[in-house]
Image (cartoon, rainbow, N blue to C red; front, side):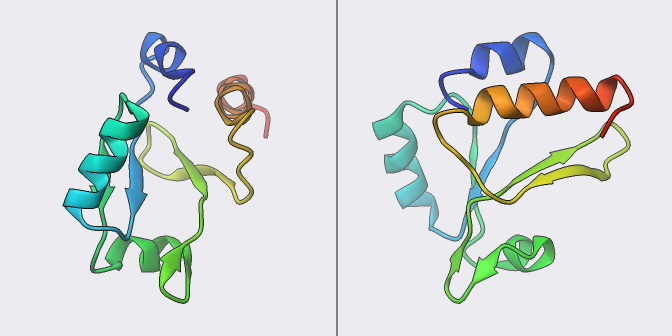
Length: 100
Protein backbone atom coordinates (compact mmCIF):
# COMPACT_ATOMS: atom_id res chain seq x y z
CA UNK A 1 0.00 0.00 0.00
CA UNK A 2 3.00 2.27 0.55
CA UNK A 3 3.93 2.42 -3.12
CA UNK A 4 0.37 3.10 -4.25
CA UNK A 5 -0.40 5.56 -1.49
CA UNK A 6 -0.61 8.54 -3.85
CA UNK A 7 -3.60 6.99 -5.58
CA UNK A 8 -5.32 6.45 -2.21
CA UNK A 9 -4.76 10.10 -1.33
CA UNK A 10 -6.07 11.19 -4.75
CA UNK A 11 -9.26 9.18 -4.15
CA UNK A 12 -9.63 10.50 -0.58
CA UNK A 13 -9.13 7.02 0.92
CA UNK A 14 -7.64 6.87 4.41
CA UNK A 15 -5.15 4.09 5.15
CA UNK A 16 -4.13 2.89 8.61
CA UNK A 17 -1.94 0.01 9.69
CA UNK A 18 -2.61 -1.81 12.95
CA UNK A 19 -0.54 -4.38 14.79
CA UNK A 20 -0.06 -5.69 18.29
CA UNK A 21 3.48 -4.27 18.46
CA UNK A 22 4.28 -1.31 20.69
CA UNK A 23 4.58 2.33 19.61
CA UNK A 24 8.39 2.31 19.53
CA UNK A 25 8.58 -0.69 17.21
CA UNK A 26 5.92 0.93 14.97
CA UNK A 27 7.98 4.09 14.72
CA UNK A 28 11.12 2.16 13.73
CA UNK A 29 9.18 0.02 11.23
CA UNK A 30 7.48 3.05 9.65
CA UNK A 31 10.78 4.91 9.34
CA UNK A 32 12.61 1.89 7.90
CA UNK A 33 9.94 1.29 5.25
CA UNK A 34 9.10 4.98 4.79
CA UNK A 35 5.39 4.40 5.36
CA UNK A 36 3.24 7.41 4.44
CA UNK A 37 0.30 6.33 6.61
CA UNK A 38 -0.14 5.97 10.38
CA UNK A 39 0.45 2.73 12.26
CA UNK A 40 -1.77 2.11 15.26
CA UNK A 41 -0.42 0.17 18.22
CA UNK A 42 -2.88 -2.43 19.49
CA UNK A 43 -0.59 -3.83 22.16
CA UNK A 44 -3.58 -4.65 24.38
CA UNK A 45 -5.07 -6.54 21.39
CA UNK A 46 -8.53 -5.00 21.78
CA UNK A 47 -8.91 -4.04 18.12
CA UNK A 48 -7.35 -7.29 16.90
CA UNK A 49 -9.78 -9.27 19.05
CA UNK A 50 -12.75 -7.19 17.84
CA UNK A 51 -11.82 -7.70 14.18
CA UNK A 52 -10.94 -11.37 14.60
CA UNK A 53 -7.38 -11.09 13.34
CA UNK A 54 -5.58 -12.70 16.27
CA UNK A 55 -3.84 -16.01 15.83
CA UNK A 56 -2.34 -16.87 19.22
CA UNK A 57 -0.09 -13.91 20.11
CA UNK A 58 0.10 -12.15 16.74
CA UNK A 59 -2.38 -10.54 14.39
CA UNK A 60 -2.77 -11.95 10.90
CA UNK A 61 -2.23 -9.51 8.03
CA UNK A 62 -5.69 -8.66 6.78
CA UNK A 63 -7.35 -5.66 5.15
CA UNK A 64 -10.71 -4.22 6.10
CA UNK A 65 -12.38 -1.78 3.74
CA UNK A 66 -14.70 0.41 5.76
CA UNK A 67 -17.30 2.38 3.86
CA UNK A 68 -18.54 5.92 4.37
CA UNK A 69 -21.28 4.46 6.58
CA UNK A 70 -18.53 3.23 8.98
CA UNK A 71 -19.43 -0.41 8.29
CA UNK A 72 -17.08 -3.08 6.98
CA UNK A 73 -17.71 -3.26 3.25
CA UNK A 74 -15.11 -5.90 2.38
CA UNK A 75 -12.47 -8.05 4.06
CA UNK A 76 -9.29 -9.27 2.39
CA UNK A 77 -8.03 -12.24 4.39
CA UNK A 78 -5.02 -13.05 2.23
CA UNK A 79 -2.65 -10.20 1.44
CA UNK A 80 -0.26 -10.32 -1.50
CA UNK A 81 2.11 -7.43 -0.78
CA UNK A 82 3.08 -7.09 -4.45
CA UNK A 83 -0.45 -6.53 -5.77
CA UNK A 84 -2.28 -5.35 -2.66
CA UNK A 85 -2.62 -1.65 -3.54
CA UNK A 86 -4.09 -2.46 -6.93
CA UNK A 87 -6.34 -5.15 -5.44
CA UNK A 88 -7.74 -2.69 -2.91
CA UNK A 89 -8.31 0.05 -5.49
CA UNK A 90 -10.12 -2.36 -7.84
CA UNK A 91 -12.28 -3.61 -4.98
CA UNK A 92 -13.17 -0.07 -3.92
CA UNK A 93 -14.05 0.83 -7.52
CA UNK A 94 -16.37 -2.19 -7.69
CA UNK A 95 -17.97 -1.29 -4.36
CA UNK A 96 -18.51 2.30 -5.51
CA UNK A 97 -20.13 0.96 -8.69
CA UNK A 98 -22.49 -1.10 -6.54
CA UNK A 99 -20.87 -4.47 -7.23
CA UNK A 100 -19.38 -6.87 -4.68
